[in-house]
Length: 324
Ligand code: MLT
Image (cartoon, rainbow, N blue to C red; front, side):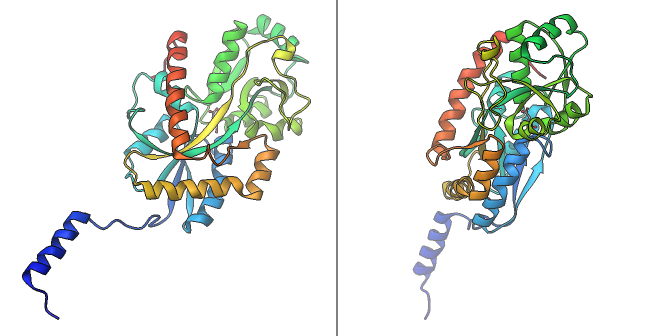
């Protein structure tokens, strides 16, 4: 059969209108960026979820710890990536606090990202090296008043939730301690267990094991209610410090401009991970709650992200502490 000139032009025109052929997603291994060090709470969540997403997507999901600048280096790296779903970021609420905390970012937090879905909610607690002298939280507050120049408080840098939690603790108690930044609370927890630093405010994902194994001392949870996996640790409010509540949430992001079918595939894989019995069990053991199907959606994460940007901006501006 011979094509007439008009038919050939029509086919050519149609091809132009459709644009260049898009590779099927995923076209190869997916890189899952984690903004903090290996072994820390964000890394643990990411690796558990990645294992199931890999099964769902039919391609390897490779976790890469892109650490530095309180998580903003990984966010910047995502913002600069090709929007094809092959590079994904798993970050916690620090992605919204750093938007105000950092004087200058290499990306615009309002336009840089598209949203896959929320992943978890995680409580926090205050722990210390195992041989730290105060016996309980009340004794800790008295000890800190008398020894504030000597006590060190670890965190994962400005923008990390351990930083937010520590700053908030110091603000509420009026006690300023010397802070020690790490590339994640994985290494910060190792040094707390080893006695190189005194105190750390961490997520249950990282702290539950060391508390249960008596590798660190737990003084108080930063929650309204006690934490189910650590029922013997009282809340700060039970021990006289009201308002010390810091809840962490994780979300999954892609660069702005990622095609919707790609985002939908990632979101479906994320939901499958949150339903996986092994992931659910590990999360439960670590006091880490998977979100519901409705929350693990692009729409929910987008709404949460922008409402948290608005929530934190005035709080951080009022605190007047910024990072470069
Ligand atoms: C981590 O994974 O190391 C933590 O989430 C860091 C932090 O405190 O934000």
